[in-house]
Length: 355
Image: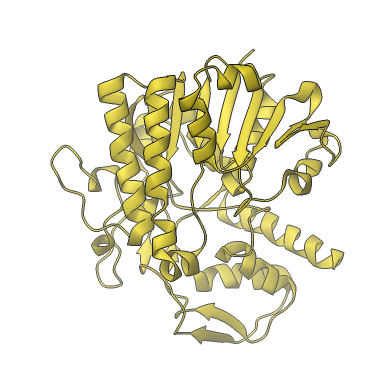
């Protein structure tokens, strides 16, 4: 029996990874989340037919067991406390879960949110530094078979993403070996850059198999409304007019569907073990005005645009150079922009009909 660990397993990416592992393996998936940001399992497990109902099979203290054979185990609490238990008492994982060694560990526990969170509460976001440091301290002692660390495109130098001077961001634009790092995006970018460095140290000095990824703007049907894509979709479904956009709307991002993110993540884990990072994106930049245009096309109307110039917008253009992943590793996304946005819009319509 294999055991996988998903920290932050009730967040957007974490819960989609947990569901993917449940569908595609017969392994046990242990998810850890304090629900400060994540969504309670009762609200998302039920949508997976394979999980059955939205009632846990059983509950023991702060642990819930879900799915066939209790294969999804939810430990409710701060991931740092989970790590503390495992470090203070070496037998705790075996006594509590029957785990002697994890196979794959996916580390999504973090203080996350949209642009308003990154700019509005940067010191709260800086707590990610503590979470990551404690995680790698544990990981090099527990020695799981493989570790996946999600960095971010926010780790890239912001001076490469300006309105008058932006480029497609390549993995080599962050060069630890030669000390070329640049200025990341706020405390969130700094924490992810530091996490990547810890991943490289864990691989080089402790022989831990670690893969890092730099996802660009991931989106999907079950993403919460603090992120722009589902928020814009919901407003289009409700036929908002005038249609508000943060900033001028000309700022652009590289959008990639969550299914492609997960497939690339797992693909990377099979090919990268030294803590180095790869981009996950489409290689194309799309402005928020273009996203609004796509969603209002779906909704069948063309509202006037109202720009909100006092709102935080981040860098002007952030998009990936995917040459290494496409040409050297041989992976490409399956879900095109319009198809992915259509899925999000259709879910927004269904959500609106429930109200």
